[in-house]
Amino acid sequence: MKSISAKYSGSQLLQKKYKEFERAVRVEEIDGLRLVKRLAEDMEEMFHKKAEAMKRLVEAAEEAHLQHEEDPNLQYEYFNAVLINEVDEVGNSVELGGEFILQPNDHFNNLSVNLSLSVVQVPTNMYNKGIKWKPDEHGVIAFDCRNRKWYIQAATSPKDVVILVDVSGSMKGLRLTIARQTVSSILDTLGDDDFFNIIAYNEELHYVEPCLNGTLVQADVTNKDHFREHLDKLFAQGIGMLDIALTEAFNLLSDVRIFPYLIGRESAFADNLKWMACANKGYFTQISTLADVQENVMEYLHVLSRPKVIDQEHDTVWTEAYIDNTLDDGQGPVLMTTVAMPVFSTKNETRNRGILLGVVGTDVPVSELLKTIPEYKYGDGKKRRKPNYSSVDLSEVEWEDKDDTLRNAMVNRKTGTFSMEVKKSVDKGKRVLVLHNDYYYTDIKGTPFRTYCNTDEHPEHRYLSQIEAIKLYLSGHEPHLQCDKELVQEVLFDAVVTAPLEAYWTSLVLNKSENSDKGVEIAYLGTRTGLSRINLFVVPDELTNQDFLTAEDKEGVFNADHFPLWYKRAAEQVPGTFVYSLPFNTGSENKSVVLASTAIQLLDERKSPIAAGVLWPRGFHCGRPHLMSW
Picture (cartoon, rainbow, N blue to C red):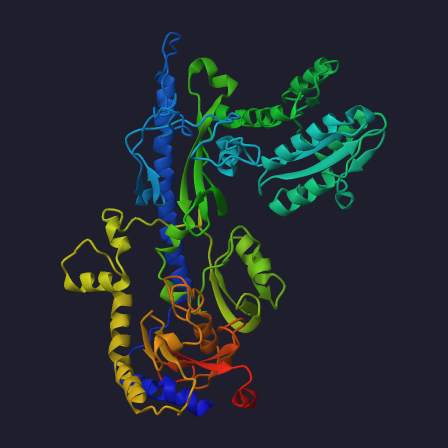
């Protein structure tokens, strides 16, 4: 098996060719700490530019509000965002609609936009179908920017919240349903920087989660979902003793604001609750129906924003990476971060009232951030950006053999290096690699992202194929086309060194008899720089796996931010050895494909970097005896 692998892969020829260039090659070891510091500096520069852009927008909005004088006779006309390009039965634009010419724009994640006209989206229950936000199962367009994490984080400061829920007998039926929805909506307004707990009360106190008595818990997604499950278990009985619940809440918190929500249409307790709210710098709200929940819950955020407004604290907020369910890039929801800053009323007559006008924000898709990073220096398993997931604790990503040493260093915003063995699942969890990784880390002041603006002046270059782009770059006819010069040089070097492999594979095809080494189908070369060579030993129609190394085979081919599994596995083994694998669910009917891959060293040294990987698949019928012997 090994002799066949060596023959058809051409690995020995390739290793010999790289050795011939050994004297002309200089291996420069990457200083990981220096590299990560340089990336951090670039990201800090990007943060500064984004922050300055936000400040200019905030200043413009506050100045416009300051100069505005209300005219009761003025008729406001605007376009409703959910009605644009909508027509009635006779083909005319609906009221507040209008005809908009929308064109895809690279600056807006390739969404269709109009740069000349603006629209307004009013956050109310709208039962007519729109085109910008998808209705929920009830036909209501529920999108409200004030419920978005970026708005809430910019409008308020981190907070500790204790929610008291009356579960006395008077709350039976619809009232308890409204109360559950109100608490759930309050939880939606809490983020990872907030802490909370929920206490149900009648004659006695009942912490919704008994394991968290007398403490507060971080308002992350997992904890909030856990508490929501316990809300469904509440039932109404007994007499409501608010005094014991308030005493417990005051014991948990020191500086307290009280926000009472009166459930139902009755107002017998309204005066007492209003006094309680005013005496404790809070806000009283009455919620009569389920439809009132969302709008009334938001009132407490405006009260909590007043100190920031009065002190004119224009804090710039970066959200953690999150999935934007309102956007779709054709492959699924878009992962992004948002930078936001609050907008205040600066009029003298309202300055002491602390009026929040709104929040200015801009989205930054993570995919755009990743395009700026030289993937070929990170993605082969030797160096990686971490974590590879959105908004997840590092301890859940890396299976450490040491007690959270790396995590604690990063949480404490330290700079340094660290080595450890980790277990990495591959092939969708079917296999595990044990790796010895070196980590380099440093803190990033303000934001963990860097800008992508190098080719914004000529975005059409992004749509060139790799071959088209490199030909255009080498021709020198497009001075605005920017490429990674170091990477281009390495690709050209690999192209020269591996060129004899084409002739070698061709000779094997010409000299191959009908029955010799039957089953060998493809030989494939992939270098660390992304150069690929492929050779077929059978006609395409005879391939066991028709999707292999095609666009549908996303796990098997190289792209800008992905090294295929076969390359990673070969790179982690001793050079010169072959890795054989029988992929799950590969091939059609009763056929399977065995993949054999090996790594090619750049130099003849133990610690030499991996220059390339060679792969060849061989098709088998499941009942063939030689498969059993292998």
